[in-house]
Image 1 (cartoon, one colour):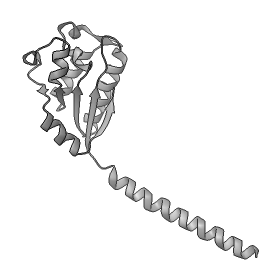
Image 2: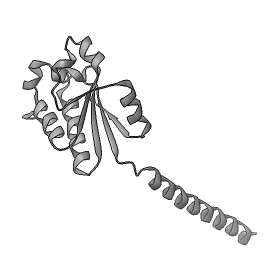
Image 3: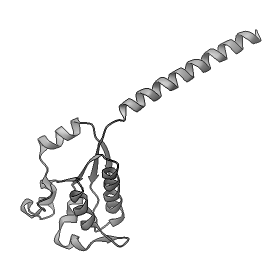
Image 4: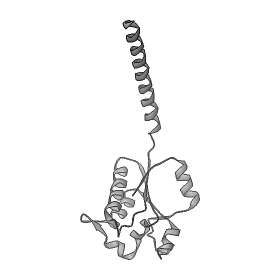
Length: 150
């Protein structure tokens, strides 16, 4: 009887290892995406730390060769207000980081409705940024990027 239980345990362990190995292979094939989207909703005037973390994570994605987009929306668009040019965290100017990000190949998309809610005009966004359009954003989402929200 003892041999029977040992055989059952061995069979179950073998099955478990096989399942774990197969699952690991599937996991690797599903995480080969090379797109990263930073969903920047934080108000940099209220939470400069969160904005800084999102910007730094976007920079790290570029350094790793990812296609990185920062989507400024909700309160994130406030970073583009004229007084946003002076915002810093840990002695780092947040707008300078954003500009360096686009200089290094990153994309910044700005929500037009969110701009309007905060009293800004679409014509005021920097030329190296894009206005968000529903079709363009839906196409990006269909590509299945990894999305982090700050």
